[in-house]
Length: 118
Ligand code: HEM
Image 1 (cartoon, rainbow, N blue to C red):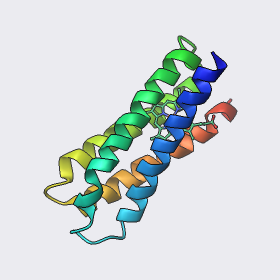
Image 2 (cartoon, helix red, strand yellow; image 1 turned 180 degrees about the vertical axis):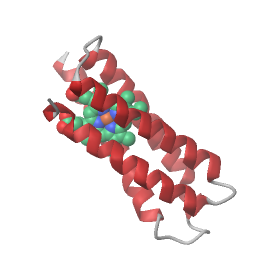
Image 3 (cartoon, helix red, strand yellow; image 1 turned 90 degrees about the vertical axis):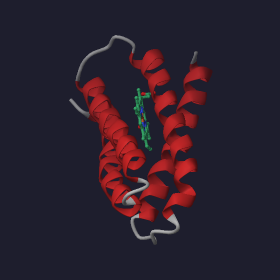
Image 4 (cartoon, helix red, strand yellow; image 1 turned 120 degrees about the vertical axis):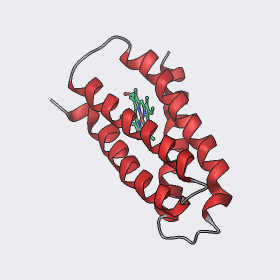
């Protein structure tokens, strides 16, 4: 089981890093560049979310408490960020990236502090 968690966590972190990193970089980009990365961002988002849900099923299972709550808040921010990026990519992609950047930064903070929240 440990190997499954290691693989899922690796996929989760790699896809998440690309998603969040590209989103942060695109907050300082031009309108024309943003749509070129949109598909890759959505693939990374889908991978990060899918691996995150799988980790939830394997690691958290039915557990409740501060760690699970913190992860759940972070996951909610990530899902909203994906919706914002998807919904705004035609009308105002740079603004979509900026809103998603704030949400995804909050996601990363929640994910990394979750084991220490008491
Ligand atoms: C729906 C979205 C998400 C869900 C359901 C989710 C779920 C989880 C779960 C259950 C864990 C705990 C794994 C464990 O303790 O072994 C975790 C850890 C982690 N997640 Fe997420 N996650 C999501 C989105 C993201 C995103 C977008 C990032 C961006 C980088 C991210 C980064 C991380 C990191 C770095 C950890 C490791 C934290 C640590 O143990 O120090 N997650 N996630």
